[in-house]
Image (cartoon, rainbow, N blue to C red; front, side):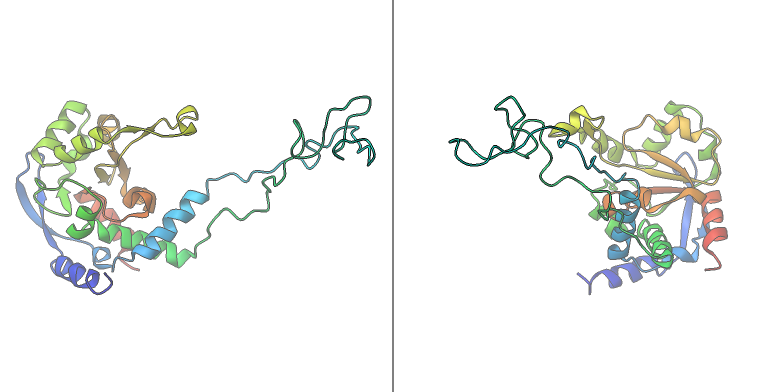
Length: 271
């Protein structure tokens, strides 16, 4: 795999000049992609950055050191023909030990456990640059499972008119004309009920990710597109690895507006 990926990436990234499409799905001009799209795709670094962002949100858990020990129970000792577990005074009920009802935990979680996978600042920046570059490589987009059979170009660049769409019906029409609708149908059909107790804890459904729309400025597109399954909208200055590489897998199907590319060039041009 390591010998194939660099060759694929060079073939895709040799030409940084791509078409810009309007909302009708027709090319209107050509534009040069920012140099960040020529960054080598490092799947290992992207995975680390994703896990770092994921584990940073996990709150450390601990237990009260006296939990299960607030009792008068003492062991009777030997000679009674009964197990030598602590028993509540005036009763034969066992207490305090892990196997007793209301007893202490055998191996309780501790707040000292290292949960957050830390990552260096330069590694995190490289991971973000690499994840952005992966959205321009057809190999990685297909590898993630996106349906791009009708998409005219990877990466897909559209005019700034996309940012002004304010109705869901307008966004749906845009998806259909640009060949993105089959991938949204794939995401809708892939919604499954989670197995296990997560169903009772606010995460009942597992929902696949579909199109990511990157804009320079929100002029109504966020509310217009929020009801489509798997679709996310983000401004270029808020891009992160979790959006670009869900699950730590690079190559999300991404739509950029011209102003978003200008913002990316402004932020990453002088690296």
